[in-house]
Image (cartoon, rainbow, N blue to C red; front, side, top):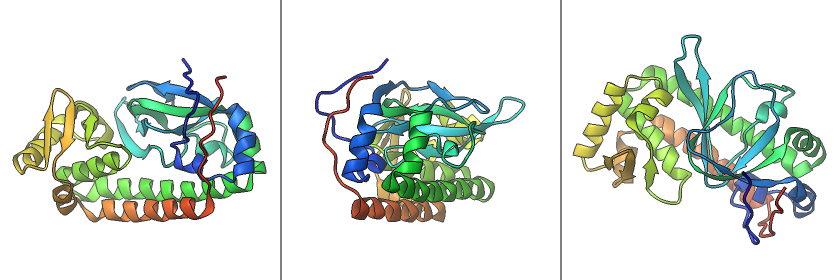
Length: 252
């Protein structure tokens, strides 16, 4: 179900960085939608019908094995866009997109998004920069899952997640975290217990609160800092290139 705000600031960094005239052309096609926790935006192999620009929601891109096991290959929040395979020439996607943190986002029909990608210079350039950062994130996650401890992986995941939020609290069960990291739930329970005992986090009933960010950064592997540096460079490009839009987005 779509929702509408009369005066909605564009909280997606990529959209906000577009040239003003190009954004005005794109704006009538943007639909503000509620993205419910656990909802699946598309499955692996699906033909893309929409492209999404999250604002307050976070979406997990997951690869699912033949036996049903899955692991997160990347996360997308207000820094980027979902459906980039469309821009690379693919009509379908190899991953599943599931909402990890409920919130809002904009969606646009795939055909319109592709037309504007090919036409709008700023959207084209910014999207390619974002795809580079996304590939870096995927590469780091693959290396991290292979070479670093569950505790380090959990710290990295928590830090990247709260970077996309406006608070230090997230709603997420240990079972879902284990599924995204591709590890056993017992491993997450032990790692989370260690972080809680150290005073870095608190958790209860599916709610995790980060109490000591610097502590998590100390325990995390270098993957978090590498990923953060890549996205900081991306945000710097957004700020340098783009404009701030405060116009309302009409209901579709």
